[in-house]
Length: 156
Image (cartoon, rainbow, N blue to C red; front, side, top):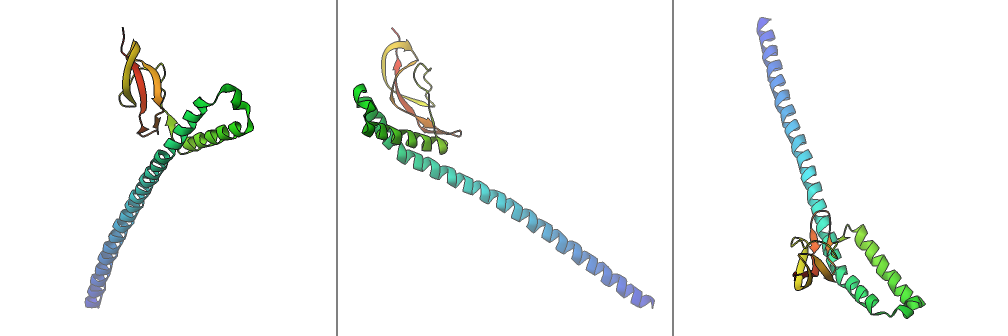
């Protein structure tokens, strides 16, 4: 009977060891899967961010053309329905850019910052200050999508 008890104890110990081994393996796999899910979520967020940025870059020339067209419209004609319709489309595109996370970079009367502005010319004015905006710049919370092209003051 003691031999049978010994064998049962040995079998129980082997079963306990296998259970612990399987349980530890399951815990590792669970942790690996959680890590995989987190990395995959980060990758998808990065992809979405890249797609938004790419789409925004495709839309910017359209909004630039709307801005140029708006500047060329005489004040007296801005009240016509067709012009109002075009300006409404411009506002919708600007709203869409905001919904994509794009924000305009402030320029006029700002200190020149080479990380967000691109100087295209130096003109008479307060040194280091932005005097005129040539092309709007846009950024997201993470980075500059397109730097603002500006004219800066060179002092006197």
